[in-house]
Figure 1: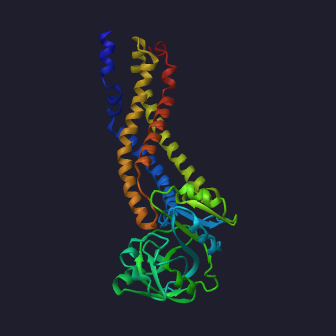
Figure 2: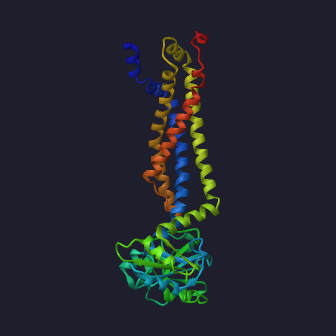
Length: 389
């Protein structure tokens, strides 16, 4: 009884793993590569969907009124402003403010190329978007043709941010109308356009003259402190016209993500990328452990011959597979953090490493390595010591 107890305390799996350093390094590199591939797919998909939610999460209120035909942010579906005014009669509503949305052609004055811009029109006295830059300087939108430019817009918009920082303004055209960028803000792109712009509700009419001021695309409903948004939403539903509907901020963000997941192939593409990464990692671990079993078949047969169970010898390989998973995770996490930083800078997407995502990939790694380890022990489980000796 003493011999088995002593042997069980011996780190056989660890010694097996480090017995051949080059093989161990190759296994760690392979599993790390697979992890980075999974991190990349999850990060890029998460960044795309999080970026879609970002403007919605910046809405300066608790409820949002939209057209009954609303599908996604950037779609120009109008409803009468009078519908939004009706919400003022509900108990708990503090204020309402319109949020205009429009798509127009931005002119890069250097290249003379036109790019699509998403324009937000807000009331400066009660803006429908929370913009720290505007809060610190409310006069940014006082000019009749003034615009704020999103510093996270695509580079093909031109050197707008650099020019504004250097000269205080950038003159160009928006939809064929003279426009002057007088300030900057940071929000991030969506699928709707290459550029984000913010202007006052008055200026918005200059850039979209065919759009009636009585028609709005979003209505922001601000509530008194402590008021339950769901209660107010239920009250509004009892008398509002079916041509409009009301969402909480969380509901609208979830609907935005659901629309793009349902109507684009992004989900399928990124899901297949994750699957490929897991399969690659699993194959690498399987090959390493299968070779290990073959190289030490006589030693494992000896252990079985002197009385150790199949579970004991199989457990050594399973422990070794988990050791590979643990050793490979740290370098893959560090590499992925660098990759996320590069993606965030080059694409303006919200590609961030969250604790939940790291734990998810770690769980995937443990699971795939464990399954691969179990498959690699098939020969070991069928092993009869008499066949070896």
